[in-house]
Length: 97
Ligand SMILES: [Zn+2]
Ligand SMILES: [Zn+2]
Ligand SMILES: [Zn+2]
Image 1 (spheres, rainbow, N blue to C red):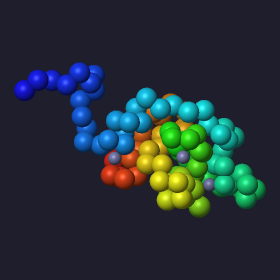
Image 2 (image 1 turned 90 degrees about the horizontal axis):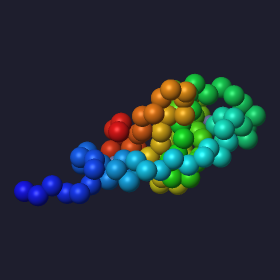
Image 3 (image 1 turned 90 degrees about the vertical axis):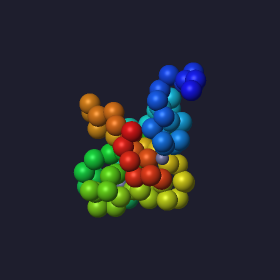
Image 4 (image 1 turned 180 degrees about the vertical axis):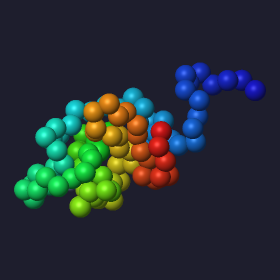
């Protein structure tokens, strides 16, 4: 078997593979976009959509806007927006990459 020329081994998740090179600037660096619009700041942790730069709150937060963004936009991959965290999450496969 020949090896493919891709530098990274396949992880079985096309979304995470495709997102590995995406690193958009956050639209609302101050916090969750929808929470800011609601005038609340009750989020627990923040997530950044790597497709468009949307910032949303995690599933431990009151409103779960990161998941809401996925459901409305179908953007499949987000990454942690917390300092020092670089993991990414595929909503399609519910896995970290
Ligand atoms: Zn996936
Ligand atoms: Zn929110
Ligand atoms: Zn998005």
